[in-house]
Image (cartoon, rainbow, N blue to C red):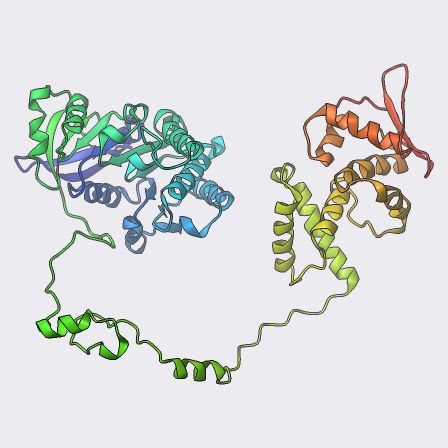
Length: 488
């Protein structure tokens, strides 16, 4: 299917269209100084292609959120979510092919780079069955793919640059078509800019940017001065999706507007010179009352009035909804279900207990328990039990094993109980890899030192038969595992 997007007119008034299918295969680079009309161009492209292809907009200034009212884009405020949540949202949007505007307005530069990197990586890492065509528009791309580190951490710069490189270099096979816009070509990483085959070059004044723009357009250096003379909203276009030869395009009108526009002159507030002098006197008693066109600053509350307000009885607060009383058995059931969900999460294996404790508290609140009775040390021991497959450590059958483990460090409890559970049931001895998972490590050497330490406390007796299979006995309980290979 061929879809032509009307971008505007050329110098003769003939319409200039962009082949959307070709654009998805060849990507687009837009360049121009501030005020040249880059955002207007991107908005025209997004409006005219809305409904034809999924659109993803990385918006550092929040200018494109107005697309949601007319075209139904989902608006995500990046400052409101954690990195994991951003990645999950991106994966879900990729699956359901919903158009989205990721607004990064509330973040500093480093936070914007981190959020955009996580979002783009999640789009890139989507499963193959979700590789639908998507137009990925990145405004102010030099922020996310800079040539130098600037004031952000090197780790953040590399992550953001890697995500942008994947988008432009490898995104096509995954259906991701990068459309990047930048004020300064010289500040944009060359390996990101070089992957675009379509170019729309707007007004720019610096020689280094004009030279790079002329090279990309196939113009001679002495012809580069024409880029400086372009009017606002006018671009030189070249590429298989728009024209095989450089043409001048006047971008057409748009139906939505950005929340922020170009500065406009407005009348100054009228006041006599004497009144202005009085306004500069910061003494509260001397502050004049002027017919200003804007809202006056907040009134300074006198000290006695402020004290009286504090002393006045507070208005009755709205009572918080009361949660139903739960029995101890019901609370233990909630704990078991929450711990089982945490343990079954593949991403939870390498996280420290302090991080998982926050997840535990949130899940308990969602289940109707406002304040879990467990503190962090108690949660750490319950987590160790859960990783060993024991979700009800208060059961009588585990009283002896838990009593024996009292002298072990908390991080060894899970490994001890994993072996104890297999020994009680007569199951094969857990492998080194299984013990490592409960111990929170990937080092087999650490697992063997762990087993040796527990054995030195007379809690384990390890036996290896002639076939090289290992079995472990817990002598105080009389439990023994079946022999099994130590390596999984």
